[in-house]
Length: 153
Image (cartoon, rainbow, N blue to C red):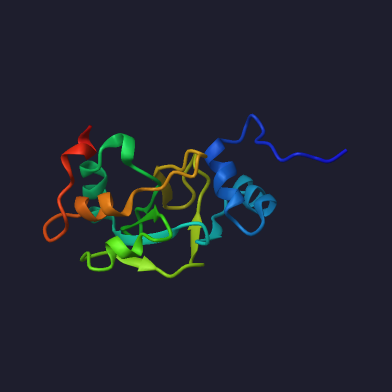
């Protein structure tokens, strides 16, 4: 009888999704249960890094139903958005944003609690939804394209 991989009731769907993005999901869950950060390599998404204040401004400007995963570190004053693999096309000329190369290790806490000074301000929900890079670029202010009226629905 083949074992099937399912989320257990005590695991948040976002944790399961995030762990499945890692090279060793079982090790990710074990590390989180011990209170450690897990390096998740960006192979299914890219990481857009910016200062914490910039990330907080952007999250306020993106419509709530369009916001995707945002990891923050309050000690490092940094924020990391998870964007689609083609997101660098929209963010390449946006000031104050560094799109990290594919396969970058992002050290992540579980989605349900902080580890050290890192916490998901907007946690992955398990569906694989990411923030739209064009909306993120528009939300980052002057010099970026404006949000289309349809974004506010």
